Length: 94
Image (cartoon, rainbow, N blue to C red; front, side, top):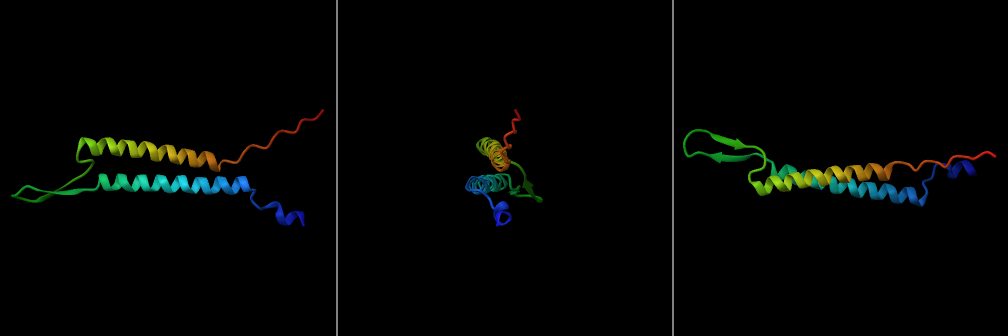
């Protein structure tokens, strides 16, 4: 009977897994917004070919991209920290 419950997660582990999942989803949404801000846009010159413009297209977009990348990095590191198992206490032998 004890073997049956050995592999079950404790409530703390379940909470940590949910928290890590939410943090990773927030990081994915930040990365999606970065993709939108840095997507190539068409630039028509009026003559000749249509050229794609890559990267942030204004200073404000550039600042927002930097903020989003930093927040996504912080969210991923927080998710990794939440998923990391707590170390077992050492046994003290007298």
